[in-house]
Image (tube, rainbow, N blue to C red; front, side, top):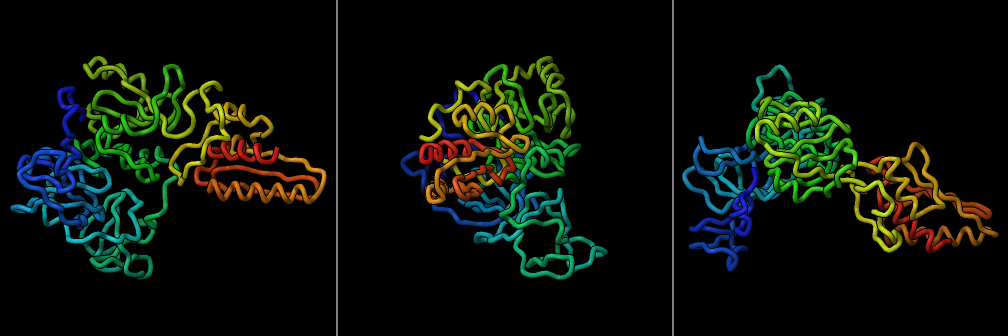
Length: 407
């Protein structure tokens, strides 16, 4: 979905809980409405709850809310709750019976494409429900190979702790291959192009808006023309988005194929062009620097600050790492481009010890911690961002800071 130019200056109704007759209390003085309310915090209890643009069962599906997701309900009328989801701010109407009062304290999320909720710890029993990838549940106990929930039993191996993150969002998206296309869908039973991006990157800890135009504005930075595409890059058209599996292959939920499919980017571009879908509007990268030229990199790495990296972004390629090494020329890149290493030389043991103390203080201040070995007359520092299994801009920032303090 993409907004027209005439609506650009108006509040985006997809993410703004405001109607002429009712709006969120936080919007008082911002929008016009007959009354303003605080809303009630609630949690999705259904496996999947449709969020529609109107309070009727045949209205267009805007998105889907999964079990365990939290939202704010501003109106509950005739079986429909008008609400805003927490995770992506989507606004719309959900069935009231798919919700319960209060906020959830989930312990696990569903890591399988889908799993069954059983009435007892026995796979031969008829399932009560099927929970999709990404649904969140609260464990109250264990029974053999099953996790016990308040309303049933789920196979242990289909769950993972809520704090765990996938390391490769593309691999998550690849698991949805051949899933049916569904406008507004977010599950393996049916999913659309932006829903696939949101679910895949969300599993890696990267929060994405719901629609493709919002994602194009919010995710990553645009790649300049001529920069080769790589795994994890996003390619956007007006109203469409896909994920690159490699430098040539696009993975996307395709309306023309009515399924999640993998095909040549060139093929997709030609087909969309012929169908009037227009050209690619941008390609964007979420991890690593964007330009292969050293001139495009930060001029003063030591003046930057390390940013939290909890995984879900791609490590630098060997070529990108070499570009950053121009700012830290005395460091070497080892182990296939996954580690940054420098050995400092000193005249005494005490000098090496003092250097380690300075490095430790820097590491604590930047919340980015290297491996350090030292002995008589030397100190060896190894940097790697363990959350992504490779090098990140943070490694080069800390390397430059260590150089500035140690020489």
